[in-house]
Image 1 (cartoon, rainbow, N blue to C red):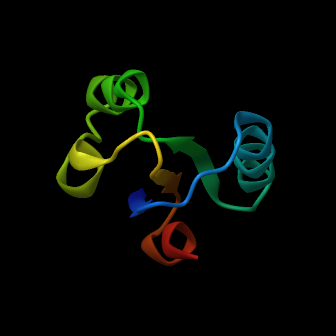
Image 2: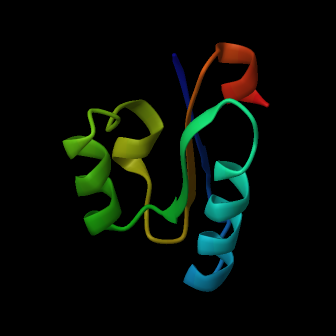
Length: 79
């Protein structure tokens, strides 16, 4: 299992688009979990509960896009 998390500063998308991106990622082979959210306090709290609040995510703001994937392997997670 591998986890990849990326924060894209200043990349805002509405929640409908983010739900669509998350759902599409879940359909990819080897993906166990995937989420695309903004770095709001509530979303950062969810990352903390899942043990993923580290580095860039900790400092993400409400206008920053946070992408997180748990996959069967590092290559799948990064892709």
